[in-house]
Image 1 (cartoon, helix red, strand yellow):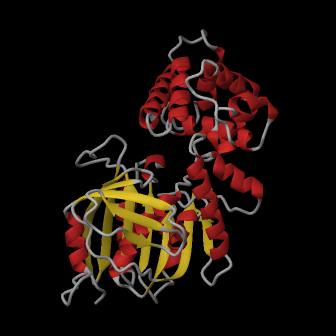
Image 2: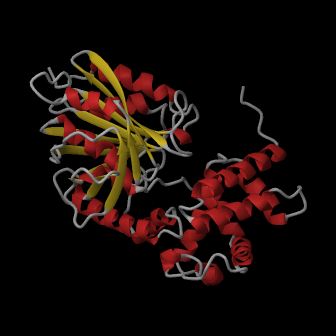
Image 3: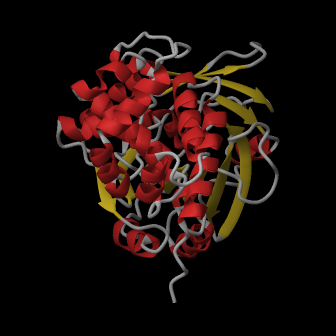
Length: 401
């Protein structure tokens, strides 16, 4: 028996709360989007019937996750702005991603935003109803890149669970610079891209010495509920729309990531994306795509995926563990995910960086760090030293047996 559908009053409350949370998260980091999220939260605070645009949004978003709707609404508008639609020319003046330099403190922002939504209501309704949120934060490739360099494995098979367009599968073709907050240590440089594309500030437990040598990537495979294969410029524009409009530097990094993806697709280990509805399709995906890879360890990773899953990813662990225990090669699972249970993160919105290893009939787990969702700051935890010790010296307890 299906659960009853939520009432419009429930939808209105949930959407209002989610837009307000997004406003709080973006404050100080993306001031334009913080203001826009807050503006919509104010619309939703009106009583039903008092604001026609709020009523429209409640009806439009009733069938979608309340987490998705704020991201979809602003991505739909950003897509139109990137496409140069004239109805949004006034709002575009506030968007640095298209060269807009108008100050958000000016009185016209709220009116321009409302007029843009009203002008594109029909197209936005279709986008909110049908589009999938695309995770294009290309700094998240560090989730797998740094640990992979610490293993000492000569080669591996790389797998992204929730790959979107697959850009993080080519993190080895980007360039990360990890600096110590105290300034006492030499920065760690990872990846073949130039110049530095991602500057990461780290603190907490000291980062062990790392040889910045990436294992040979034998295959690159990603799965997603709605994988976005970048066949045409329109596909790239849709992906770019999910960049927040006051962050032109992230748009620049996305374009560099797309270029790296196209370069890898011309290599011997191109990116392969397949459709899979996680967690239900995970056993089939693992069996069909990965069980026939006995020549090197498998490294799987997911970044900010579990928020979008009905069970918050609870079943991923048991399904993956059952498969990994049977696989002939070591299996390493790396995650950047919200902590649904356990200790609270040090700052609002931060996510946990964890590692699970199945090797030689044993399973081990580490909580390596807390990190900002966009990978700009990392706070290392004591488990990092235990993880590093497994791969160093003569008594390498994590090495394949």
